[in-house]
Length: 207
Image (cartoon, rainbow, N blue to C red; front, side, top):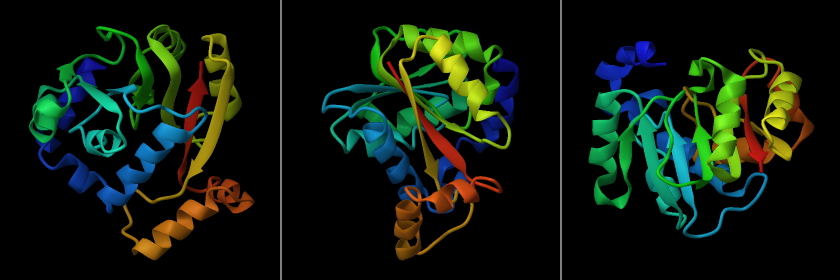
């Protein structure tokens, strides 16, 4: 993964603001599902956010009473996340394929980065070894067969896999009412149809 991180060095400043059309709404909904999908996280549980970027997810998880630890391979991203989070949460430099946390985390998250793992099945097994409740990541079903990913997670020792369509758009700004409607639609059959053309799943692999 480390040979690919340099491309993000010049993008670390205001990463979340430029990567997402509606960063607060997008990241707040992501944090909600990290906390609730598959199995509920409890106040005080720690979320280990691998490939955390500028740590934009951190404030939304901290606001839910969770603890947060960010990890990114790009030094500029680590610096940006450290500036954003200050003393509220630790941020470390670490590679997706080799990082080991100082202690197990209740939840491990990997967003927009699972495809950077050199060996995905090995990554799932490593994540299982230091994850106490669930691994949460995003999955493009048009890029990876869902059945293959589920089989790999089960082989890594996860007991149950829950998939939730995520329909809040990343690059298109919507008014608040439209975002709320998109979130409501995630629980309907319409969401599965939409995934044929765009959007992603949020996957919770439960221990």
